[in-house]
Image (tube, rainbow, N blue to C red; front, side):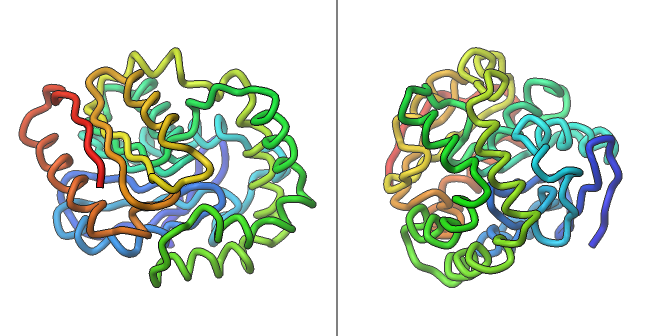
Length: 277
């Protein structure tokens, strides 16, 4: 697997297809293979680059793993894009991957053409309950115990790719390094720097926000808030949990593929759109 050294660590990635670049960013926990159900269709039109966040798959964890944070991942992504000299980017990010994608659009607007933010992190209005849960999930002992169960709770539609995701969550993503990274990211979610609610209004890229109607982690209300914050963002609700590209891939491609294609035809922002599946 190709790798690239950044000041935040080594980035592992893979590429398929040709054309304009399309980045796929997975969640926490996660793996580039989470996108397997939609990869063939996307790679038929784009140069698809899937990153592996540190601590997952073959990618080494940060040193120490407990130092990982959503903000670190965002900085790592920016370094990767600059070192690879990627431009006219389309980016699909899930959860913490969506947070990193949004941060990239803010820090390098000249490089990002379009965003698809799936169950995006960074828009939670934290209260006592959400803060307590992030701290609870930020315990490595709790994360190790809950990892397999959590995947059953937030992946609501069973497909072969979802089953593989659940298996990875219950096995390889329970390794000490993966657990340490997973827990550290949860702790970072309450940090003020993780909050995108003020800065997201400066995103210039054409944006689609997708929520899963049955997602217990990032509810529809948070997706709607993200879409309302980002100028002229499209908002889509699909009948899934946290990862609609794996749970309802045909419905996901039905809305995402035309959106990405339109972004290549016209760089002007599209009218806001609300839809549900």
